[in-house]
Image (cartoon, rainbow over all chains, first blue to last red; front, side, top):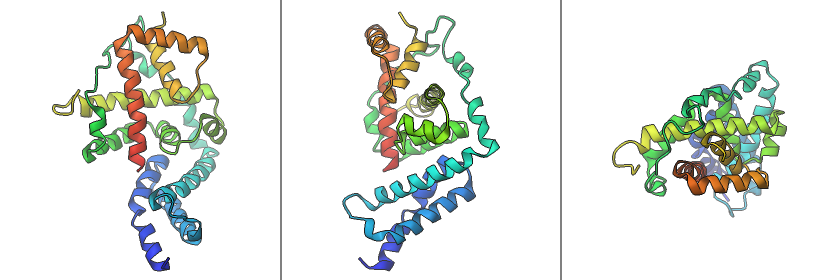
Length: 191
Length: 56
């Protein structure tokens, strides 16, 4: 494999990697650093790329480790303490009435699978992820995009599994609401 | 009968693979009787698939 060609192929995924890192880290400089590290590690370890998975998947795998390292370092900083504050469930009381029923019962989303082929749908997903509180988004991405297990996330962030479930529940409720309002409730999106 | 609020929380927890068997049975029962939570459960699974797609 020609070295310069491999480098430019890796580089072509740069903006995607940056978008993922930015969503996870919410810090432009740190995201740049992490992506730079990832591309460097990819070039140094080019022989480790077997071609069995796509280059993008392989790079995402490296990025995942770099992001977890960065989050682990960040978790030691005082600013990250707000994770506990984001564990409060009270905000979602508004979604349910006093007897625990839905205020606005979730309706069917028509044919949601068809949305997965639409680029605009993922613009809305991105918009909704950006609206989440930073730590909530970070934890949700670790679980759903990076696919770490609950145990791994709890260990990395030194939180209890109960706290983790509350954060993930919160993220899913908020994303569902946001997609409902900004996509499925709109005409022509089947909802 | 558990409430929708409790059911929705347990349904989210199920995505992470953690639910006691008695609670699981109560959720199944709730879903038989509740369309809103059935939709919510489908939407959580869709959200998971959407995030996998998003990563590609």
